[in-house]
Length: 82
Length: 183
Image (cartoon, rainbow over all chains, first blue to last red; front, side):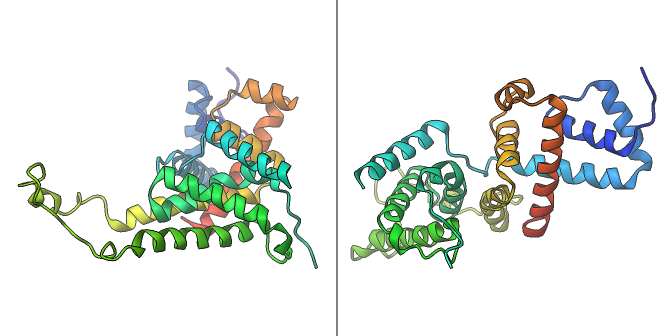
């Protein structure tokens, strides 16, 4: 299965994928090996993880699709009246 | 002079999440927040002619929203006596519970935590607004609405590697932005 060492852009790509749980086991192994010696990617990974955590924070509220549709309808009605 | 245009049809899609997080950090009630936002949009429509274009659309909407929030607090405080904090423990149901209710919060959750978490939503949507159209929609779909890679690729007619490049750029911009405003 290919080479063990990754280039930085490959490492970043795997890191991005792993944020969505789409990186394979082998890719994650290679990423972690890369992270042992690559400072820049360590930093990138740390920030990327932080971002994922922040977005997943339950205190971050999203307006649901239905609620949005409701609002949009209300707005459209008013726009039509104009 | 008029650098900023108003496009009311895009309001819900673009600003509702930001405004919602902004409101909920201040009124702490989902339904109420929703009401305030729809009121804001309606008020915005009504006074669209007054929009001078000096500020961005969002800033303008937020300034309306602020008035709405203040009005809300005025209204609930306007009845005499309601502005005072009153604690009644004379009905039989709550009797005896008062000691527990006054115990301090759990040690690992400070007031600061709460505040930070509530403002976080605003910060995230603020940063999201700074991305370009395509990055914003795709990042939203992928990260917040949890669409499959494949589904997004089909919807936008792009290849997976295109998608990952867009995601990568969006994540980078988001991380930079949050670093400045948040972390």
